[in-house]
Structure formats: structure tokens, C-alpha cells
Length: 303
Image (cartoon, rainbow, N blue to C red; front, side, top):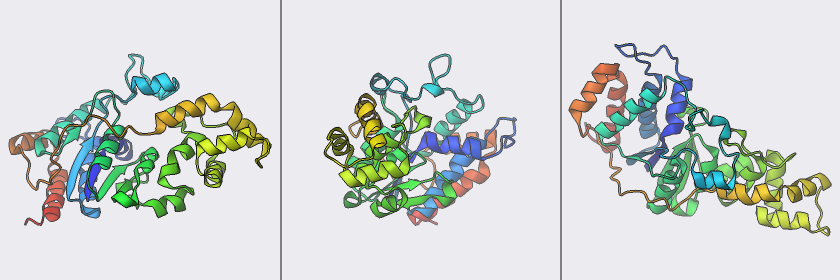
């Protein structure tokens, strides 16, 4: 399986999931770095990886999404217009990126697009099996049994990551992958600045989508007095037209980002051993890097 990693999702979860007391020999905080490397090793080992690539946000809040929905991610805006993030994280992200590059693991970002869009483009243009490793539920829309695309969801941590196919998504949320965007828009997601439709939660959203097939038909039913629909739901849908028009386009991933050609082949040894050794010695990463090497070696059948 080609494992495509939502790198920002993994380093944020590592940063908040491991103690800040994890530091290198020079005192640099390295909890996100350690967690990220160990997370890659776990993904490779537990999900039979045959290839690996990491996607990053070249634009965490693309203008085309903000133009559609001005509330998109507004709560994460820093005073300088960038993304608000902990002071101890940016330096660690730089270390992670240097390590990935030195090892030869592709790091892909595309100007004007989020990591989600890069993952979507790679997943839908690559012959399966593909596993998209993420903690972002919006990427459930990429699950495609016919093309052997799964989501490796690490919302509860890498060690507890679940591999989701169509049936697993239906069991979890009551909708199929091609219905997930409509479901997510109705429910909303405060973490992304998506208010949702007032009074509609997971259960009602799933019922609307499964009953009518999709959001377009649910809205058409709400506009038709002859259809049977709870008055409060009908009112909520009819009053949320502008939001729904925009939000569907915002939540749906772009599957046509101009991603460069990559070689996701697994490397048991780094492409630049000296650079990896220097980073390892500087930040005290030997144990984590050994675990990564062991996972890559086992996955490629080398000893």
C-alpha cells in the first residue's frame, strides 16, 4: 500500500500528544519531531506500506476557499495574517522537513492548495492500493473501494489508527464516501470555521442524506411543501442556502492540484546519510531514527 501522510496533522498531534519536556542535547524541544518519526515508523509497520510520501500545506487557507466562505479558519488567524501556532512548533517542523528530505521521503506542497488537496490529487491519480493517513475527517470523502483507496484515520492516535473503507464509513457515520461532503457541510465543523446548519447534528444530517441521496435533493425536498419533512429542518435548510452553496465547494477537496512527479519508493537507508546523522546527533533522535530504519528495512525485505 502507498501510504500518503497528512504531515501537518501528524506533527500537530505529536506536538500536543507528547510532553514538552522531550528535548535534544542542546535543550531544543523535540516532542513533535520524535512523535512524527515514530508515527511514520508505526504507519509503515502496521499498514504494510510499499511506498511513502508526505503532503504539506503550502497554503493553509487558500484565497479561493476564503472567497467562498470568509469564516473559513478565521479563528486560526494570527495577527500577521498567517496561521496561529505554538511558539515551539515551527522550528520542529523545519527539523521534520529536513529529516524527510535527507532520508529521501517525498515532501509535497503546492502553492494555492492545502495538504488535503495534495493528498486528494495523489490518491486519485495513483493506482491503488492507497492509504491516506490523516486525522482530518473531511478526507473520508476520498475513500473509494473500486479504486482501492482507504483512509488510515489516526484521530485517536497513530497506534490506534483505523483503516476505513466504504462499509466502515457507513458504520461510523451512516453515509457513503460520495455523500460525506454533503453530510459534513450540514453538520458543520467549528475547527474549520464551518457553522453547519442550525439545529442539524450528525444524526439528522445522516438521515437527510440517506433519505434523499444527496444535499441537492434534500434541499429540493425542503423547498417542496408537498414533501414530508420536520418543519424545523425544512426551515433550517431553506434559510441556509447561501452557506450550503459555498460550503460544499470549500469542503470538497481539489483533485487536480499540479503536484510534481515523485518517487515514493521506500528507502531502508537515507539518501543523505551525513545530513541525517548530523540532525540525529544535534537533536538526540537516534532511537526514533533507528525505529524508522527498522520499519523501512522490514517493509522492503532487507536485513
